[in-house]
Figure 1 (spheres, rainbow, N blue to C red):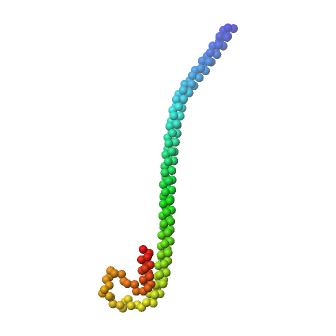
Figure 2: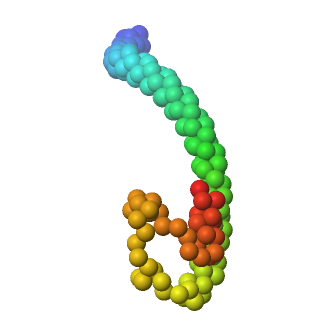
Figure 3: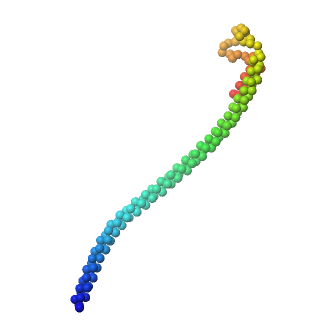
Length: 148
């Protein structure tokens, strides 16, 4: 009977040895994989830090661009108001000029056509502008001078 116990003990020891070698191999693989995993985690941490730094730089650039766009928008609003004012003023002047031209047309049509029959005056130089012949022309020249 003793030898049966010894035989059972040998079988159990053999099974234990078999499982111990398998466990030792698995632990070796885990140790190798652990080093790889640690390197992977370290690389992931470095990438995360770089991404956070990049996000901060991007946020700062976006803030700067936003401020610049706000300044340009303010300038554009001021220019838009100036242009609206100038356009309105130009339209008023154009309306005044149109009224003056409309009132001058009947006067010019009624005026005698003496321009072709009048002799040239020697005292007027060609560079000098011709003198206004009617009240409408004087009013028109006055309006043009005021528009400047």
